[in-house]
Image (cartoon, rainbow, N blue to C red; front, side, top):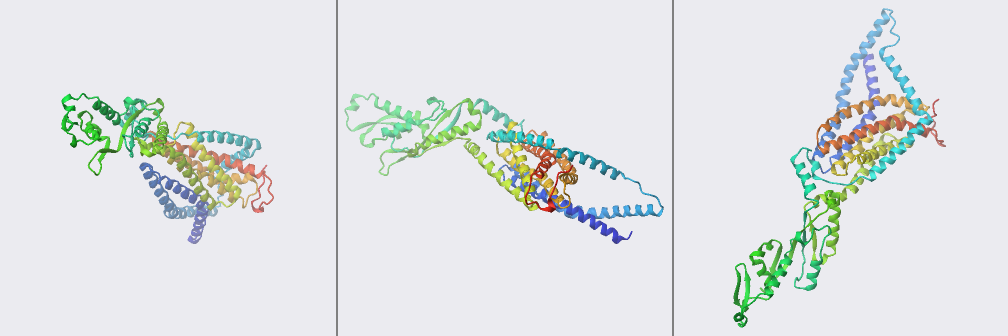
Length: 526
């Protein structure tokens, strides 16, 4: 056969291949890139690195398919076509009839028969009704699970299960947090501590779940005892009779000094110099007035401990911290603030739900925009969008019902799963939309759609599952959460793509439509 005819056939086949697979490849590339791009914005360094690497791999793979792989298909295809034509020509020359049916044709006939049976099955009204009923139950379970997910944050989830750090965190959780955990209360504007009203307000300050005064290190109590003891001190009569003398307390004890060298109110300075109380210098800040007179307290802090069996869970500790801050706000005139070692983690807990919701909504809108680029038919777009939403809610809900808690890792994994959930529905919806141009019955359209993308969907699902399964061998919360989310996306997405979406398309075709484009008019096949 002339080489020009071979080249023409190669061009025809490659063109047809790119036209058929181009939209699917583009949808997959864009959605996966966006999903990993969103994952790259998460605060977890490991997930950032993983997402950036995969996003780059997706882009490189897309370029590879359009350039190197397409070129290889041309080279190999030219030889294949030449062989086919030579084989046919040789058979004609020797008057030898070709085999009635090649193995490929036999396989194609078997596949067509299976597809016909399957499409007839899902087009049945009773089967469709049963699928929709099952879908409603699935939605109910998923929504209940999604709404019941609990925001939680524990540091041990960042380490391997057999790590020594994990054991330390577990010991702290079980033996320290429920019984004795410390917090610091800072008073920035104490005012005049000699004022009875101020002293009363300071002493009235108390926090819920506190162990009590025996766990509180509060300098003011020792200071008051010091003043009380100084007032009750027995002074020798000869000293009392000397009007020009006074007693001054220092770290070396007490001494008789001229009265003019002792300023009234200097008891605070004497208190801090006393050996038993000198350690309180680290708790308070004092300054002397500009005239060189009395010392006064400008700020101080004290520590206390809290306890409670419920404090094993960090979310309960976050609630308790907010209660403390609410009490501190009542003493704003004293400039009271609360410090807790784990506050930087506890503050994240209450923000995770709104942040996760915003991220999920943004991702969903992005995926919807991608679907709009390739599917302009509103009913088809609606079904694809509904499937994406259904898959995403299912992943959230099932993960929650399995005991997963909403933390930054879970949030990142589920947000990325929304990006992957658009892949299969978009392929099915796009090909179904395309078949409406030359096919009228719903069953025929479904058969052509599943024949075109059904097997590739199963291939992609199996290959993704095999890749993800390796993550279960790593005893790390991060890898296992991501693997579970990916498996759920693949499984739920495949069920939606091969069963639920075709059923919905079949049911939509039964609805009357006043303005139905004749080129897309469909009827239910017999």
